[in-house]
Structure formats: C-alpha cells, structure tokens
Image (cartoon, rainbow, N blue to C red):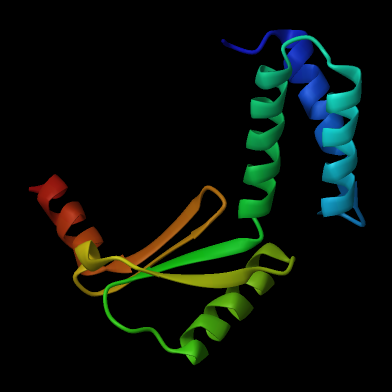
Length: 130
C-alpha cells in the first residue's frame, strides 16, 4: 500500500525526533518504535516502512561501502574514511565488500553518491561511447 500524505508526514516528524546532536540515536529510534506500538497510528506498517527508509538513508550517509575486486588494505580503507570524512564534514566509516565483477579497482558508495575507479566502470563508459 502506498503511503498517504498524513502517513508520510508522520514518518518525517518521527524521523526528526530520532536525532541527538545531529546524529540518529538508537535510544530515540527505540522511543519512536515504542510510541508507534503504544499508539497504533493508522496504517502502521506503511508508517514503519516510510520511517525505516528515512532512517536507513540517513545512516547510509555515514557509511562508505567500498567494493573491491582484489584485496584492499586497512590503510587504504582508513585513507578512504579520511577523505570522505573531510569531503562530507561528518564522520564516515569505510566498510569493505568484495565484488569480483569489478575486475580491478574500487567503487565507493556514500549514501546515494557513487565514486568509481574500476576497470568494469571504464569498460562500461567506453562501450556506451562507441
């Protein structure tokens, strides 16, 4: 079921209550979930889905998903963390994930931003230009 305007608005309001000092707080999220359970608002599953999507998107902004084809050193991950923390002006933690389809290189995703320096990405760009 698609969320109606009231449900989306409530999800956004609850999302705003989930922050402490500019970051999502597990205690606040727990409090929001407790409120939803206690008050049983209209369309609770739709509300929870909307709220979850907002929280997940916010948490993704503080995480650099580093996809790599071969081994990646801890020093490289720390360098990526440092660069992304400086770029976004907030703490960003790098998490490595193997991806054999890259052939070589890296793909870094922070929230909805994607930074790619891989052979697969270059080949795709080349084939699109031909």
